[in-house]
Length: 157
Image (cartoon, rainbow, N blue to C red; front, side, top):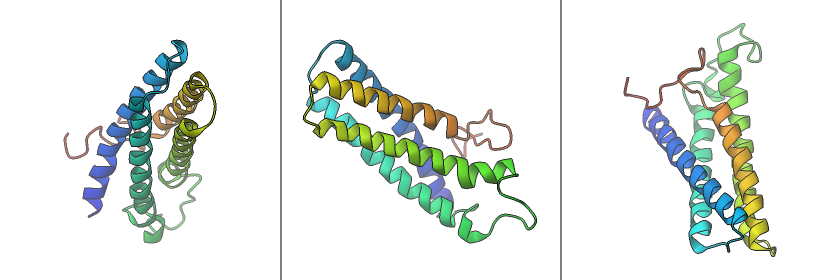
């Protein structure tokens, strides 16, 4: 089950990044072109929020009961979590960064329902999504990050 959820967590990462880039582009085009908020814009932001919340639930399970989960007491005796780069990343930095990004995505989605002009909605969505993208890119365990690296596609080397 752990490997299946880990692979699903990885797959959803790519779906969320794709939807986030599409939402940012749509928001930028709408903001710079004074365009109305379309149903397509709303659907992209809705699917982005749905997939990010599903990702959050899978990530919470991984954080609690996964291989390095806090319920498994996987931290070796005598290791301080905050001093160890690997455990600090997977137990603190990654969960906190992703939680902040998902909150920003949710707030960005909430702009659709506000009673403000469409250009303001596009502008707010753009900035919330852009900041979320930066945080996500900073807190993903990319293959080039030495101690915390994970493959782009687990199971394929």
